[in-house]
Amino acid sequence: MEISSHKTTNKLYIIAWVFGLLFYFLDYVIRSAPAVMIPQLSQQFNVTSVGLITIIGTYYYTYSTCSLVAGIALDKFGAKYSLFIGTLILGIGCLLFLASTAFVGTTGRLLQGAGCAFAFPGCVYLASKGFSAKSLATAIGFTQCLGMLGGSAGQFIVAPMLEKGMHIDTFWLVIGVITIVVAIGLGIVIPGQKKNNATAETKNAPQQKTGLLHPYKIVFSNPQSWLCGVISGLLFAPTTIFAMTWAVAFFQEDRAFDYHSASISSAMVAFGWAFGCPILGYVTDKIGRRKPVLRFGALMMIGSLILLLYFPNLIPESYSMFLLGVGSGAAMIPYSIIKEANPDEVKGSATGAINFITFSITTLLSPLFTHLFGKTLATTTHKALHFQQAGLFWVASIALAILLSYILKETGRGKTVAA
Image (cartoon, rainbow, N blue to C red; front, side, top):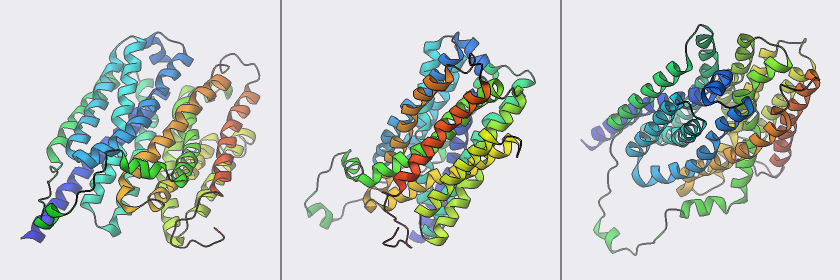
């Protein structure tokens, strides 16, 4: 009876994980979609393009900080209430984009970031409850893959819909309502957290008091945790800031692409991610080492950017962007390293911690890139040079990640002294 009950609970968590995948898919759709509606949103909020990019970038302020809150909430209250509230906040944030003021738009974007912070940690939590240890890595890889497909859909599918006349209000209303429906579904299907009945032996044992922030104290006191987060952030930034925010505008202004071609080329990065994450993850598990695959992916990113910047006639820009996405799948490898570099009892908090550090890097780099290259996008007369200089900014970011990887300790089962 007990075994049967355990299997039933596992099935319920797998069903809940499927709903969690919808949440994570919507997370990336909502994260990337504003990049293909910059003129419309600028008009809606009555701001310049640069002002709109600033509003879009506030997503990462709350995403990074609320990643820590999500880790604590999942450990303390379980997934049922945490994911319901996170998804509901995301839905409300989408509906606020129907307003026509910059203040409400900024508030909506902040809520979108806060809600999305619960998506990936929540999916990992549900997967760990529903799948066996030998299937868990596959489930997490599939989760990340679906998220990246959402990022691609946010540009690949939304851009043609806007071209055919769909108003942005329709998009934000529909996506907001769908997200709220998913929130209700998560609240219904996720099993409630069971309280463990303390045995007499446990009751008599001395209780060790630890605060809510104690796991984070362990994680953040480990220098390897910071290295993992910074490296991941430097590899993520070309995707989150360039591809999902600026790429459409850069292709249109500096490369004279039409809107359709610019949107498709931009969307290819997230599409490449969907392949790169599971492939690079499989390779690093297969060889039992993390750092060589991490560096290979980073070098692949640099190579694809060099092709994009200096050899656009060699292969189409969309192919270079796809290869950039495949290589940037290496940004997920530090997520495995940080878990292996910290004690078992804080592995859940380690996910929240690396999300916080990773997207804090995005929060810092986004205004810097905007100041250096975004503000001059429409005014520069040296279009080709401007595009190349902007691209070299990301080459430098990736190169720094490679250098830092030599300080990072190898945690794979095939680690050697030389690694």
